[in-house]
Length: 222
Image (cartoon, rainbow, N blue to C red):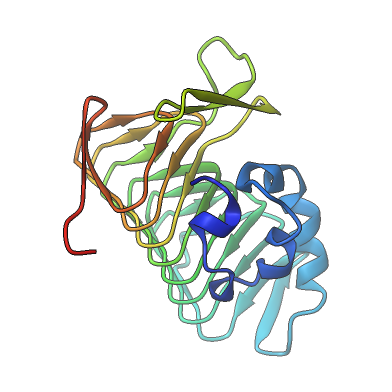
């Protein structure tokens, strides 16, 4: 339910070979910086290195007011809009939207991901065609600063990540409603919808509709 093979179609990211070396997605977080730097060196001439270790595809639209920190890669036909703040360690795929005042840090965004309005995405991996509604954010550090654990309530299992910073792992086609908070170590399975203003933690199964922690229903006709 929360392994890379369960969450993602790796055909939709330049990180396919990198991610395939791990079993769980959060295991990839530590190495994102080094991975992006090495990947950038292999990109073809359709990418321009606009400053050291910052590569932008020639078809991408980056607003003048956006900040691109090193290292990062911006894919084909992606929009990085007004006042977006990419702090670094960000691989942004093809046909993505990084919107107004959105902040990215240590992330992999698969192709066709949309984070279009006032989102914070940190230490997270967002799968193909996943979408964060306006104001929805990932919380990546626990308030007591202890190491993040993945809580699978359905199977009464707790997985140690041994990491202080883990945001959210969103499978392909996940829809997160406006003003939701995804707490540290949240994992959301493929094709799942999160109701607006939700406070989500732990593992949410694929093909679900999350209304609140005690009201998660299976989608029909999947």
